[in-house]
Length: 304
Image (cartoon, rainbow, N blue to C red; front, top):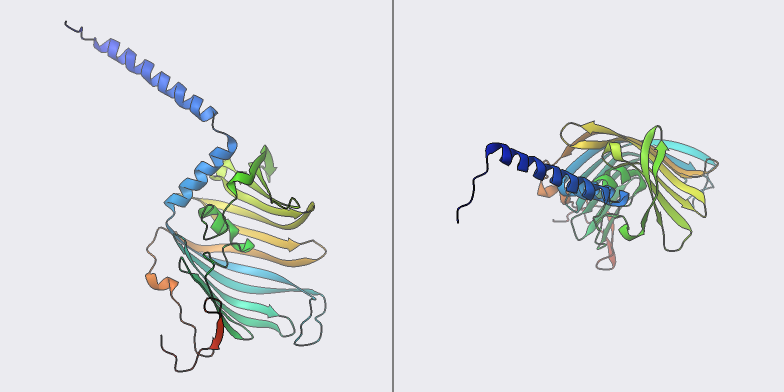
């Protein structure tokens, strides 16, 4: 039995019909995607693509005083602002944070600060040098600074699902609104009501800015505990990138801390040397080893 060959016009017509059907099916599929699925899809893709990243930040950090100190007389109530420079390097689930600048120590005032925190995928190593030189070792399975409020625009933007940081509780995220406005930016408002029922975390997600979170807020019994507002820049190569943000803990009457951070430099998917996640405590460091449940002072003639 012979098959009849279709003419060119007939083939073109069939292709147009097939294309129309595919477009209709694709549009129908998109219509069935919920707002939360649209957000999570973009977040997953961004985490997959950004294998390594490094951000250099300048930070004006405000600290609330008035808590007193066992080392001296009570501090008068008030606030002090210190300046710092922070570098965050992430490779997969590994992270290094290096913070240089100033710190405020109750009873001693503003002191120079050096902080280095490492998570190599299994163990944490932390080093602080301000009024004393202290080190910590722990096996937490995640970076100790992964949930730091002032780092959320970087960590939540690029590692929203990584257990090494503070991942979103996807099963608790609920869409409250799809047309919430923040400074003329339309947002999808997501809420996460924590299990105890008293604390609620809210996220304003901007679809026109790569599903970036332009506001984080946590309330306790209906009162704001902390709030962070972030702005982003659209990089030609990497898409929407955190640019600057400010956050505040506490109430306007009694701020516990606040900060204004600005991204000075960043790189994404550049090679990260293995030694980035290595650090030896310098001689004289008081080390609290929570892995071996011991403490010691690194001697002057310590070997690697």
